[in-house]
Amino acid sequence: MKFKSLILLLIIALMPTLAEAQCAMCRAVLESEGSEAAAKGINDGIVYLMIFPYVLIGGIAFFIYRSFRNKDTTEKS
Image 1 (tube, rainbow, N blue to C red):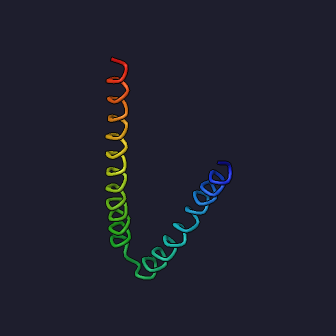
Image 2 (tube, one colour):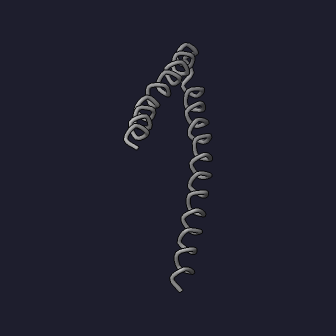
C-alpha cells in the first residue's frame, strides 16, 4: 500500500513540472508576437478548457457519493 502511495505522490509532484514546460513554450510563442490581446485570449481559452474536466469529474464524484449514501441509508432501514 505504501508503494502505491509513494508512486502516486511522485506522479503528482512531477505534474506541475510537466505543465510548466508546456506553459513556457506557449509563453515563448506569445512573447515573440508582442500582442497582449493574443496572450490574454490564449490564457482565457486555457482556463475555459480547464473548467469542463473538473465539472465532469466533480459531477461523477457527486453521483458516486450520492449512490453510496443512498445505499447506506437503505441498508440501515
